[in-house]
Amino acid sequence: MDSNWVALFNGKDLANWHSYIAAPGYPERRYENPADDPAKSYRIVNGEIVYTASSTVNQTMGYLATDSLYSRYQFRVEYKFGPTCAKGVSYCKNSGLLYHMVKDGIFGTGIECNLYWDWPTATAGLGGVKFTKERPNFGNFQSEADKMNQYTTDGEWNIMEVRVWGDSGAEHYVNGHLGGWVVGIKLADGTPLTKGAVALQIEGNDVSFRNPKIRDLGKRVDTLGCTDMKSANFNPKATKDDGTCAPAGNLAHARPAEPFNLQAGRLILKAKGAYFVEVSDTRGKLVFSRFFNQPGSLDFRKVLSHGGYFVKIRSASVLKPHHFPTQKLVVAQD
Image 1 (spheres, rainbow, N blue to C red):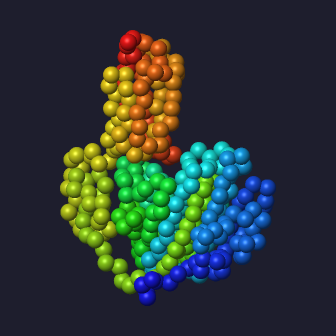
Image 2: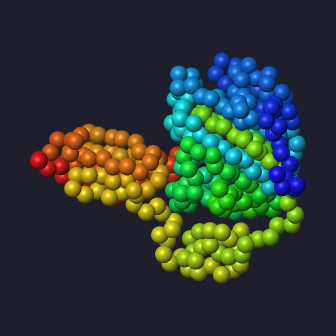
Image 3: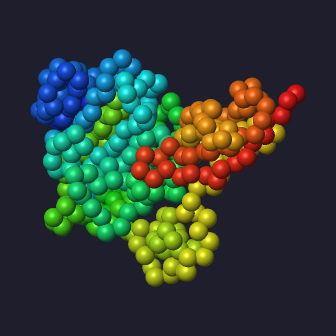
């Protein structure tokens, strides 16, 4: 390991970490020693920090947090999702890297760098934390964060990293690619949020973590460019605006491209992402629906009778789903 990095996990126990857990059948609470958690939410398996879900048990929520607080730092961790989701979980393969955490709770008070496989690096202020500017946030998943999943591999180890400069800002990287960032970090009352713990979140699905490490950062060096997402020359890598933003112009980047082709009775989903497909007959009655979470194809001739239909496709974003234009479908007899 580079001499500047400090390992935060010894591979054997969770010394120097605490947890906050809400598990089915147990009171919601903080555990100074995570091993005291009767639900054994976080386990050590082969040098990895592991949470294992059960499809017959409701989800466990919470996080594992460092005892130490950090202000200007680079934190890196490897993570991997497993196949199982807890009972009732709508969005599987979902977790978060939480930082600048200063108060306990189910989500706590701090900042989330999302690990969800479909929009990694998306940002959220937890417990009222707010920013002067952020990209991308949980209000525009489809427009920006979905682009980042092209840099991850589902079911394999991926690397999430945050670079934090006190209350001035932070950057989120997945496998070395800059995704989300925030500027001007404040608590709900406007007090600058300058430091906090780093935490590894669980949200009811299999997830493993390994090699969490941290190192100090010096003075921040900004990447200059246009930071206005509505501008025609928006620079997604810019962390400080340089006053060069042009008029809105082409806003194609601000809305998702159509992820599918529909032709000859066959639907081909060509983009990574999560989508709901609904088919109605000419009277508006829903006759078929399916959820897709990866590229694939569907031959409507095998599931529908001949006739005319309308196909509606929408993204599976939680807070801002995108509805694509309704498509006409004709299923002909062979």
